Length: 310
Length: 256
Image (cartoon, each protein chain N blue to C red):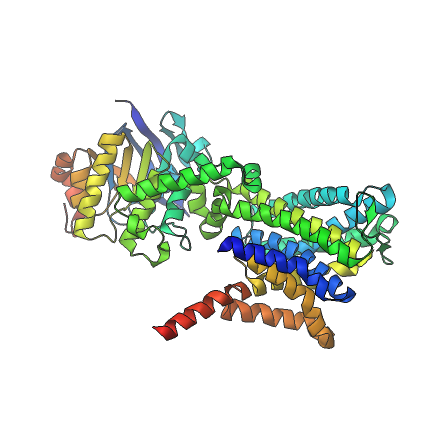
């Protein structure tokens, strides 16, 4: 049953771009890019219970690392994905250090502070990043072939998403995933059971940041340009909103969250100035009314039907 | 018999109030030792010091031949030390079997890399942990509630799940903080049997903090009595029952 659902979802994902135009391809690319961030944030927040309002910072590190390596050093795009993940992952390790001491609101503020610092450094370092003007980024490429259209880039993205999905699902189903869940539910009991809180927190922060970094590398390449405006607090809040709206505790929720964040600007365009407000309202609304997000709707509907039958 | 636990001069104060005051005692290997005392005597603080939840102001603790106070909390299970909690520290949102499997997850895990890649080693480890958990649940007669969310279970059953979680860690020294709280008479009698069996058959040394005097008197080889953080008596259940200082300390509490 589960296998069939996965195959069906994969089939839909492959078939979708054949039914939409170039702008649709662009939106699909963004949905996959966001879905990767949602997967990483779901792991951090939904599984391990560690908050981050700084994921735009890891995203920026990934985006600029890849763009600079491609344009200034001539490294092939595919290889820059690894380096972007690595750099963002190391940044994740550093951000995990305050998480060893503080939790909750304080951790939220620490991660927020980190992303503000990162973005400011990128802004000031204009020799490398183009600073205020930003920089142009070449299209994603693989083995020397430039993926000129978003149509072709989408399939590369889909492949990378599939790999990420596999890693995340493997982890969530393992004893390591169980340990992360345990740490979220009772810090003290997890430690009594032998979970090393320090290394576990650092690992999950690094992994989450690395995945977000790879996503960032694609973001710059698909967009074709980078400026620090793309990595503001609003973006981090958008990330947080998408994982809550999609569903914090499942990978399906992460995928739905990616779709939500990619398509929401289409609906919110008329309310540009209200974007923060709408994200905030959605966050609060979903946490109160549908805490497990859109991913829990089928289960809820099923329960409703059963109750009516009974 | 060598000692599984040797506590020397343990002291701990909270803002000037001495919760544990120069406490020394020994627990022989394979024995069941009761730790009793009126409410507020410092029993839970003692247990927290002995399981690295809190760090005492002074004292030395040797457990199973190693310096216990030099180890971080998460290293205790691999050293053979495990505990249960008075007010439960379960993973409330997880099923009973998930909770119990956590007791041996750290020991059996294949490591982050194998887990991310979904290598056979990781899958084997998961299967082994759940098989161990199922066996422990069966031994305590809890197989029926295997897939139930622990938060939905009665308090007494949750206590048993916590005990199962501690047991799958294969401890050699187990500290239990009021395991019978919330249990009815039948359940606590059964618990007494389980505790005796752990000591006799598996050679597990047990330090038992408990208010249920029937359980303490029937399950323990020796009992130590603590009042206001100080040791006032030590001996076999018969000796403790006849000890004047103990009777005095418990006056008004009904039992003893």
